[in-house]
Structure formats: C-alpha cells, structure tokens
Image (cartoon, rainbow, N blue to C red; front, side, top):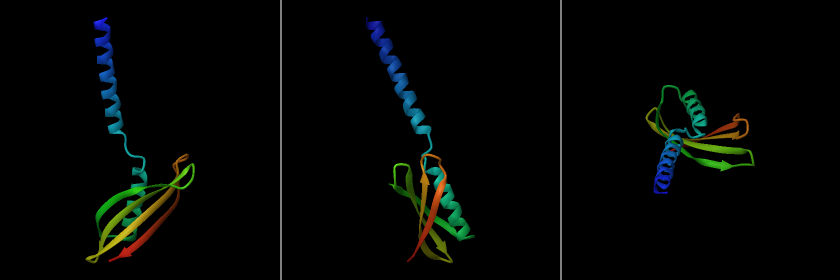
Length: 106
C-alpha cells in the first residue's frame, strides 16, 4: 500500500512540474499584436528611437472580440512622444479588425 501511495505521489509531482514548465514556455497571445503595433510605430517614426514599450492590457469588446493596448515612448528629434496603439481583433479567427494610434506629446 505504501509503495502505491509513493508511486502516486511521484507521478503527481512529475505531472505538476511538466504542466508548470509547459505553461511557462507558452507565449502570451497578445505577442503577435504587439509585433504589429511595433511595426506601425516604426513605420510612422522611421529612424526614431523607441525608448519604451509596454503592454497595457486587454479590454473585452464582445464575446469574440477584444482590444489589446500598447504604450510606446518615442523620441522624435529629442522630444518625447507617448503613443497608445490599440489593436482590436477576433479571438476566433486571430485576424486584425482595426488598429488605432493615439499620439500624446509632452
């Protein structure tokens, strides 16, 4: 009986460790949209330094659509600009529905 219990505990430990490592290796699903947002910023501000980039969250729009928001800090000719890029997309088909860029100078 003790051997069976010990085997069960060992298997449970291995399974939980495997599950944790698999979860840690998965990329966040917003990563694709972050790359799209970064491309748009680099296209709009060619040759300018992107100083900071941050994923600022997800807002649920409907049962299938969400908006992922990203904030960028760009130096344009030495002046800081904050850009907020919002990518609205469907979770069902993973296609971009719309993309907006809001610029805040300051």
